[in-house]
Image (tube, rainbow, N blue to C red; front, side):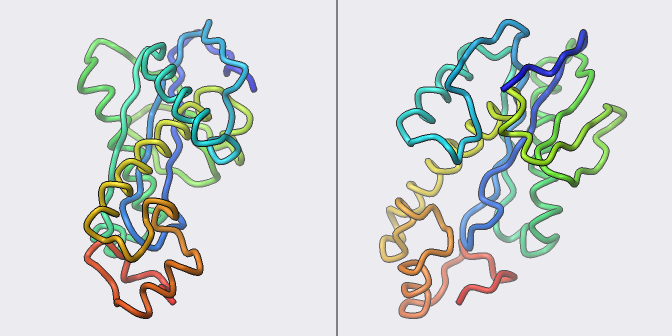
Length: 194
């Protein structure tokens, strides 16, 4: 895991929830200091819940800037999940800029192979970037922990779908619950739900 070499501020971006059947897609943007040191940091999917939570607190405390962008299931159904994921990243980047008007991001590092230009900031798409670059890994951790908390809250009023555990992803129990109880307003109707 490396820090991208640059004299300018590098902002890593990643999303969580792209393959879920329910809930929003959440993206995070993170700018780490050049001396950020954390051997445990990695793609959020490769970390245990406990380690993700620990790292999330560390990143929030030690990063220069971090934010999240959220696009709900209604918008996902309107514009498709790829566009919604990119929109969530744009929202996260925008939040950093609005809160810190004096900063100038020099480069956006994007996990994956698709992104739309954000203002005039150069970007680089990196497949599996969350396993290669610290700032993208940090963004993946923030996005996942943030979204997991949202899904746990939604699970309180929608107990039969087991979202507290499956986070809205297409597990066998989730699909059985959809078949038995139907869909909620949090389900993505443009997805194949069964």
